[in-house]
Image 1 (tube, rainbow, N blue to C red):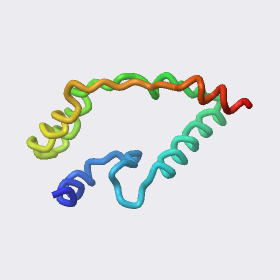
Image 2: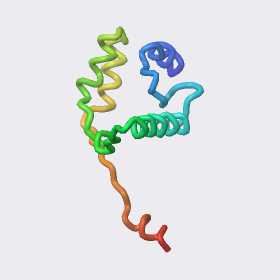
Image 3: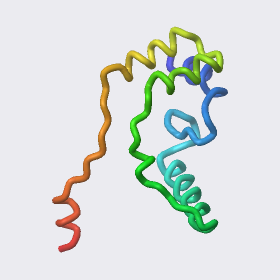
Image 4: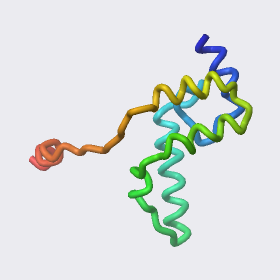
Length: 101
C-alpha cells in the first residue's frame, strides 16, 4: 500500500519536498536550504529564520492536494494524522553550555 500511495502522490510533490522520496535525504534538504540561504544573502537579501518556525494551517496545507486531484480518502487520512497535533521547537540550554567546555 505504501508504494501505491507514493506512486500516486509523487507527481503532486513540490520539487523542494525531500521527505518520503526516493533518492532524497535530509542531507539533500540541508544542502538545498543552505544554498537558498546563501543565494539570498549573496543578493543582499535577508534570511528570516522566524519563518521556519511559523505554524502551518493544516486546512490550507491539505487543500492543495485536494485541488491537485489527490484522492479524497488519502487527504482525509493525512488530516487524521495532523488533527489535534501541536508543534514546537525546543533547544536544550545544557547542550549549548556543555559544548563550550
